[in-house]
Amino acid sequence: MGEGAYTPAFLFVFGLEVIMTKKLTKTKLKEFEKELIDWKESLLSEAQSSIEDLAQTQENHADISDQASAETDRNFSLRIRDRERKLIVKINEALERIKDASFGVCELCGELIGEKRLKARPVTTQCIECKTEMEEQERREAI
Ligand SMILES: [Zn+2]
Image (cartoon, rainbow, N blue to C red):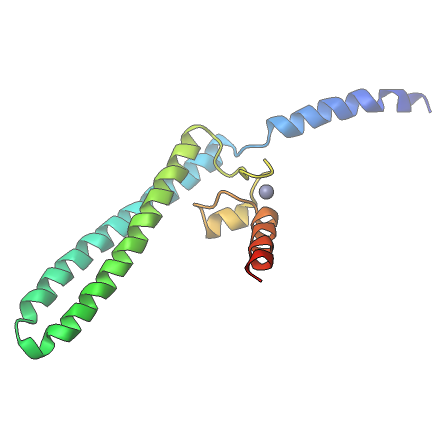
């Protein structure tokens, strides 16, 4: 009975601690930073090689009958590069969030995004609950 009187104070301190730990540890942030940089570098080198392929393809398709397929290759490469470019922008934004330690925190509810989700999709800015909620809302609006 007597112990009960201390509960609110304990909860307050505990609550405060939870708020303070709602960000990833420095070690975790470093890990994700390395992953993001590696990912960006591999995207950049892929982009570089697809540009070289493109130049090669254009040289090889001097023949008029091959023009159509060369055009298809070109469109395909451009689409890929567009997707890569957008991804690189997202990676840069994630790297900025690592700098101010807001990385890994959901932009909508302020809760930590699960580590499994972050590992699978390090550029995400929303936790799975908010993401699912958003998608359901979009589906409802689309109907
Ligand atoms: Zn959320």
